[in-house]
Amino acid sequence: MILILLGPPGAGKGTQAQRLVSAHRLVQLSTGDMVRAAIASGSEVGCQIKTYYDAGKLVPDALIIAMFGERLAQPDCVRGAILDGFPRTVAQAAALDAMLAERGLTLDHVIEMTVDDEALIERIAGRFTCAACGTGYHDRFKPTKVSGICDTCGGMQFNRRADDKAETVRARLEVYNGQTAPLLPYFRAKGKLRSVDGMASIDTVGRAINAILEGHAG
Ligand code: AP5
Ligand code: MG
Image 1 (cartoon, rainbow, N blue to C red):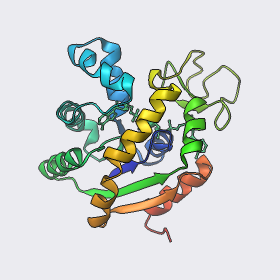
Image 2 (spheres, rainbow, N blue to C red; image 1 turned 90 degrees about the vertical axis):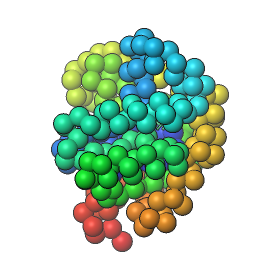
Image 3 (cartoon, helix red, strand yellow; image 1 turned 60 degrees about the horizontal axis):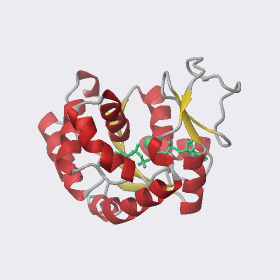
């Protein structure tokens, strides 16, 4: 199964992708995580893309398409994947079509998660992740069960993202509206697009996504 989760920064793409990974034994392909790993590695590509990332801008299509294509070619993607943050431009969507066709895979669902701008900003401001295993949390909406200890791995160190500063978040929202929102009519025209109310609780959004995947959504 190939599933695209589409939505603005803070919509809950990563949160829902992590839930689907455990439930459906699929891999999560987050281009944001790939970009952060490349920057952290200090590689030449990492240095090239850091300026874009820090400013909340999109990494150039050619670079991100190559990075994503390399990951999709790994053997663990043979059963399909959850695409979290890719594609983000019409050029990336066209490249994805070609990659899927080449591998005999088909795009099953594109799920748009809609959330008000104010809520997005609150979600991003309270977000943190486990430094050891990457599990995502929120100060208010998804705290750890025991304060300071990761529910998944017991880790005690947590990170907040460098691009989660207020001014960068505003830039990321503008980029979403200008460059990524045009994907909505693109996928609607292909008959693939479904929307879920991303303002609901994490569990409710998860159930709405499952209903679409299981083919019994209203
Ligand atoms: P990326 O890492 O993909 O960031 P993003 O799209 O801005 O989205 P976020 O990760 O901020 O939000 P999310 O939707 O995953 O929300 P989350 O689940 O964490 O990309 C970062 C950068 O990398 C880009 O700016 C760009 O530079 C580059 N990049 C990446 N992909 C690219 C591409 N394809 N092309 C070019 N450049 C690319 O949830 C947020 C918080 O809210 C969490 O704390 C969570 O616990 C909480 N929460 C989640 N759901 C709910 C809910 N229903 N109710 C209450 N709280 C909730
Ligand atoms: Mg994310």
